[in-house]
Amino acid sequence: VFNHGQMRRDFTYIDDIIEGVTRLIPHAPEAQNIWPEDPASSAAPFCIHNIGNHTPIALTDFIHTLEECLGKSAQIEWLPMQDGDVVATYADVSPLQQSVDFAPDTSLHKGLQHFVTWYRQYYG
Image 1 (tube, one colour):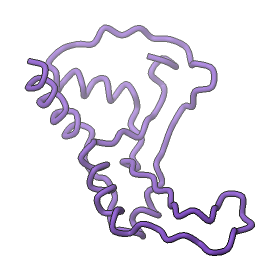
Image 2 (cartoon, one colour):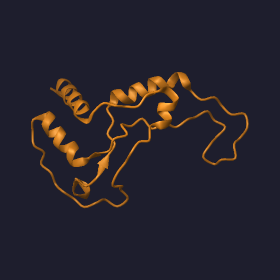
Image 3 (cartoon, one colour):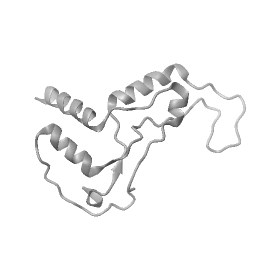
Image 4 (cartoon, helix red, strand yellow):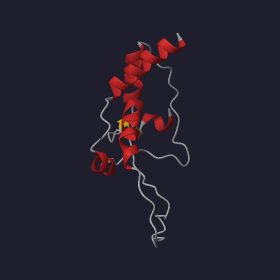
């Protein structure tokens, strides 16, 4: 586990991603007739939305929750930070909330428990 587990990630359960995309599909942006001067924009129809849980979780909490859901202890190798990695990620979902009145809200425990159940059913 890099940075000796001292990292935070914004984990998102797949059903929340599906819900966000499903809500966005009917609201596809329209093409602009004039090429905008802003280099971060385009005449092509697009819109970028973060569909994340907007609640960064410590990697150590993720590992402990997964251990609990699996009923097994992880064999952990603590490693230093990787070059180019970041200590924390966070999804700003305010544009998503404004566009389609949705923000992912599946808890880490619930999402991991659903994943473990699916994994065991699928792979035996």
